Length: 387
Ligand code: PLP
Image (cartoon, rainbow, N blue to C red; front, top):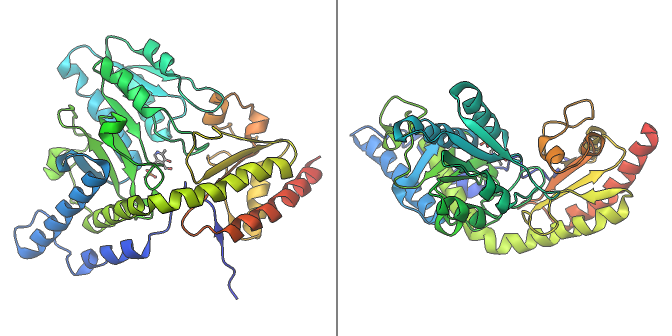
């Protein structure tokens, strides 16, 4: 008998849903044409591409021509940061970027490279103990030469939501474009680029039951964006390269499905997740929740267990058939602690005991019971061994 895996790492990636896979299949071999071709196979591919664009635009509440398909969330972030920054010399002397310290590496590393190699000034905003950016800190950081503000909508490691509409309103008051990495939000938050007040936004198909290798950059009409990837005139001359039609059809189907399931999935997952948040700090001594207790993604639970390295816990969970993660690449005190946790004031030894449990469509109440049965004795055993 094969054992069912309890998969609790949906913030890392999700399985492709059955309907998404079915929608993609014809575009691998039957409708394989190049969307630039003028013959019928090409026109069929082009039609699928434009229908997918319209679907994505309707979920995000924007115009079709504001959607650019990319290869992943990282590329979308790169495209916006570099694309906006590189228009700067043409539009005057404005050369200052603002990001937050809890951004994904796709934003942080890109912004640092622009600062180091291309002479931009970079302000990295701090966060509070919950991982939230203070709107007043943003107000104070803005300069006359600020060209872009990039602050994520929801954090992958600790689940904390940023007050995006409030932050973007500050940017708008100063006439500065505002980008948000919204990779963690589809299916969990309603996305509306006008209500959010954003000029650019990044998504990634594999985070919401779509395929890997396809992403979206929303770029508001009128926002200057120098293409970072040049070549043919694809995607409105903003991203060269033959389109991944099957992947794009899959992403659009997945985004629509996630949006349609959201009203039922959010309360279901939130109730299951709240059981973890309520029970684990009681069942496991010296445990606290990381991230904001309420202003967090509804499927996301994360914890700091004192006096333990999470690697052993993750291996123990794996042996019990439970897939989880620390939420960052660093899972031991010997490695550099997570920059997100450090920015939230968590010291290195506490950060080494960080666990993320991210729930999804397959998660049941029985799965949560199993976690509550398995995790407390596992942590107790490992703490005993390590003393
Ligand atoms: N931004 C956030 C917040 C993420 O969680 C991730 C993936 O973990 C990315 C960007 C990068 O997305 P991709 O894996 O599609 O490059």
